Length: 95
Image (tube, rainbow, N blue to C red; front, side, top):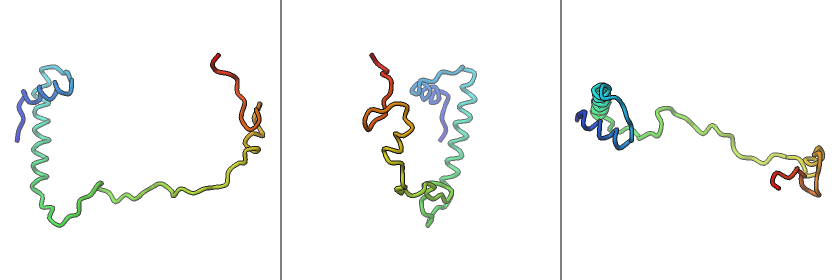
């Protein structure tokens, strides 16, 4: 399957892209090269190969959530320049 310059023009219009008319031939050639490569990939026999979400065998890199000890409310408020009961007191931002 190959695309024409008019196809590229139409796709660019749909994507609201603008480019010089002189670039049209270059983009058409690039698009057709991509389609040729996709056709080449389609010819590969993948029978018996499990579908992958990623080419590399990544595993979850995040640590497990766990609850660690944290400051008590009094410890957290101990260095506050101003406090109002159990809360930090800050200057009013809005009048």
